Amino acid sequence: MTNSYYYVVRNRFNKEHNPLDFLFLQRCNFNGMIRFSKNGYNVPFGRKPNRFRPALITKIVNQVAKTQEKIIANNWTFICSNWKDTIINATTNDFIYLDPPYIGRNTDYFTSWNLDNANKLADYFNDHTELHFALSMWYKNKYRKNDHIYKWRGNMVTNEHFYYLGGHESNRNSITEALILG
Image (cartoon, rainbow, N blue to C red):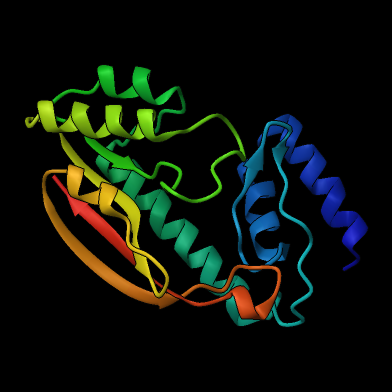
């Protein structure tokens, strides 16, 4: 596959938002990265030669089928809206997965996300203890620690893994991710 077809699909996805195009882009892009700018999905083409091995494609197809079964069986609804509108309409029967831009990292990809927004989000969930959520956020790396994470109520579990993103291999290090369940 040439990278020109990848960019045709990427442009189409940015106009039509077809989930199958998104799956294709995720299989073909640079290191499985997900990134959006004001103009849409903007991850460049990847060059790993084994990304279309039949076993990997079968695995993805099976994962999509299992996910679809779970969504249908549980009658889940997915909402794409401004974070304030989404949480204000949440009920105690809802479970909210929060994956905001990382504090202290480059957050200018899509919209403005700053410490004020991060504090408002934490304060809202700390004030509304009846709401159930999971927050995904970075916890620490070898250079620094995310102290903002302590603003959140709930139980935290962490997982350290190697971070495969970064233009140069020297920029790829391990990171500890946190999941807070409240």
